[in-house]
Length: 182
Image (cartoon, rainbow, N blue to C red; front, top):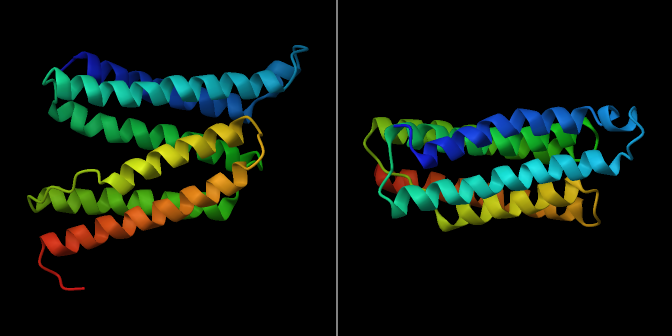
C-alpha cells in the first residue's frame, strides 16, 4: 500500500494545511521585514507543488499498475483538502467571494456523498471530462487569486459555472446508472 502514488497524495495532504496557514498568516513575512508578496509567492508555490503531485500520482498509479484501495481513498481526499484549503483561505482573507466558495463546497460535498452511495450500490462514477476541466479551472483560478492577479474573480466564477455543470453531469450519470428517468 505504501507506493509512490500514495506517498505523493500524502505529500499533498501535508502541503494543504501549510499553504492554508501561510495564506492566513502573511504577517509571518511582513513582521520580519519581508514584503507581503512573498507570502503570496510562497503559498502559490506550495499550491503548484501540491497540484503537480495530483497529476503525477494518478499517472504513475495507472502506468505502473499501482492503483490501491488506499490510493482510491486518499487521492480524492487530498484533492479536496488542497482545493478547499486554498479557497477557504482566500475567502477568509477577502480575496475570494464567499458565495462562489459556498457553491463549490456544496458541489464537492454533494458529489462526494453521491460517489459514496454509488460505490455502495456497485456503480462506477469515475471522474468525467468536465470534472477534470473543473479541477484545472479551479486550480488556475486559485493561482490567480493567490497572486492577486487581474481576472482572478472572473476565473473564480468560471470555475463555479464549470463546477456546477460537472456536478449536474455526475448527477445525471448516477441517475442513468440507477435507472432514473430525467
